[in-house]
Length: 218
Length: 391
Ligand SMILES: Nc1ncnc2c1ncn2[C@@H]1O[C@H](COP(=O)(O)OP(=O)(O)OP(=O)(O)O)[C@@H](O)[C@H]1O
Ligand SMILES: [Mg+2]
Image 1 (cartoon, rainbow over the protein chains, first blue to last red):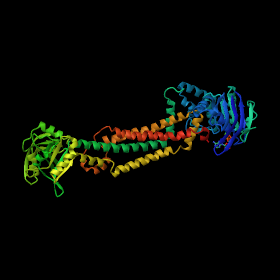
Image 2 (image 1 turned 60 degrees about the vertical axis):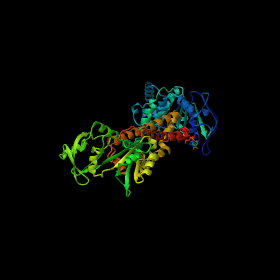
Image 3 (image 1 turned 90 degrees about the vertical axis):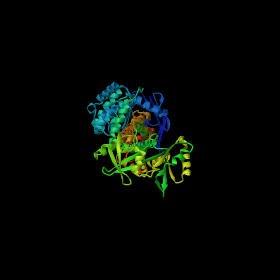
Image 4 (image 1 turned 120 degrees about the vertical axis):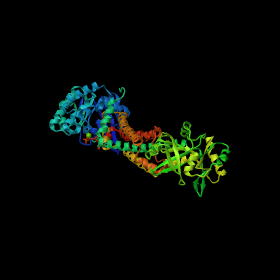
């Protein structure tokens, strides 16, 4: 389903974030990428999401060469396939919960009814219906995260990518997040979580834990 | 996938403008004021030009006066026959007119002397004379003059004090509308001989000689001929007057220049601020939008709407303000600044005319430029890897 072939990622200034990464993920698999800060976890997620392109090597998703797509098409690919839960949530603080969740749908010009039903589904799924009209910057950390997940989910993506999802959460909220992940897995989505939170390392639902170190997979 | 106009995008844009409320409001207000200021100036100068053009339409092609010791003086009406002998001159008309000061009412009347069977360059004067015949020692007065005379107990006649101190009784024959195209409210029309008596002109002398030329393109040529024929005369050409006025109204005055420099400087500061880049918050927002599946074109469309909404509303409101200020309120302040430079047009009303050039000029300066300045920085951010933008 997702394949990285001898990927090398070099940033401006000659920083090598990834070097010779080969990775194959199956459909419906839940994979955890572990590693210390700066090891290259986020870089892998960015490549899978088409947010950046490998310096050399290939990223292939569903037989499509993501790494070769022009900007316009990689955006469409992302819109149709990827739900990204960002490290810092990347919500727009001055918009309401509802507006943030619906933001990915704005360019798609869907009928109002469709928007409303999808929104309702996500609000209930992630238990933030009561905060629907609250501005995001007034939410607690856990609420912000649920909002971010709801936004990632609004397009029914086949692939969910989560970057340090529990970094800003206490243990109770972290466990709640794991519950949500399990639910998404049960809908046979492919899920990749980048984290150094030990909580994820021996969960029953996790199919594989892959260690990233200095831009290489161990 | 996209069908028809995307109102969600427009809605997002509106919210975005409101979220950045203060800055956008400030920009809109400043732009509005700039448009209003420049439009008012243009409207006013064009209205004055129009006014002047109208005024000059009724002016003869060439006006000749005599000069003595560098000053314009009366001219001998017998020169008319010499003038008529010049090829191309279709009319040479000795004119008698002048200002009469009525001290009791502290008012200046304009007195014009006419002769029967004369045609005048001034169309409305001709029309007036066609309707009325004038006897010696009688006059036609405008309603404003009649009113003032009545207030001073002159119901049917008026005693002029002649320039030589003697009295002259003139009968009021008829009155005519004060609001006339002579643009002279206090106008009196009487036979030439009566007028000459009031101003105490020597018998063959007149105020000036008006010359009409059959072919408009020959005016300059004929004026030169007259100058050689009458070396003492001062020859005024209609075009010269027009050019002189245009130069004065046009962009030569320092006031104009100051307004332009201030406006353009302010405007370019705004544009420069827009173009020089997005705030880190705005950059992040662009990155987020891209990361969650907005195409570059979606982001640029939103920016296009943003620029359009702000600049177009500034433009429309600015133009409306200028319209009201100039044509309805009569451009107080600004008009007095102008009229100081052009004291001859002291009492003119501002004629309304849709001034397409000004509208278009200001539109192209404000709307497309502002939109471009809104789009360009977002475009440069949006075309970078979304990954980098959010870091
Ligand atoms: N846009 C960028 N420009 C320059 N250097 C970058 C960029 N993105 C990442 N890097 C560098 O690449 C390396 C890998 O970064 P990456 O974010 O993938 O690590 P990470 O494992 O996610 O770390 P963390 O746990 O801190 O999030 C780091 O040294 C980082 O500084
Ligand atoms: Mg990271």
